[in-house]
Image (cartoon, rainbow, N blue to C red; front, side):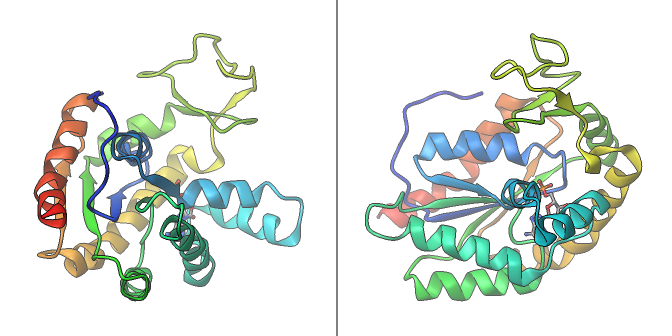
Length: 234
Ligand code: AMP
């Protein structure tokens, strides 16, 4: 990982597009520390809502386990509250969205919300990675059942074996990381990302090669948004 001290962010909203397993979670949380702005993973938010023992929690568990998308209205409402907080007085003044938007409707919703909040349009970072690489990474991914920390049997094993380093929780394969569901999620991503890429192309869209090593990818991400940050700061 590239390391340096946090800087103020002149680009208010950064979006990460990337198939499941493309590394967008790791890179978006690194970039959020780097730029000193908040990071929202819609997938994480939904997984935490799905743990609730309610009818809504059960319905969400079924949707997530199947690899399908959750309805636009529910996801847009999560993002709206997060952005309103980020741009309220005392908020972080910027946000990275990991996993949102996933449909053109969500992208249009975000555009009008940013206009209403008086913010510039988003910068879009697309982490592009081969299907083979994705399947390999995802089926080796393990997550702590208690705190959600993410490990990888190949690239980031836990020093405590099948237990979480932080809290000793059991490390499990997420329901949606089995190979058949992974292939379905990748297909779903390809289908939905094409119109989104068309939507953003020519307006803040950057394609980053996600097959390289972690540090090289982090540098590419930062370099991609540097010109936008300089324009916004001028
Ligand atoms: P992720 O952790 O980003 O791979 O997301 C995991 C799952 O959460 C996805 O397969 C979807 O079921 C759901 N999800 C996350 N973000 C969205 C979104 N923006 N729109 C619809 N569903 C989403």
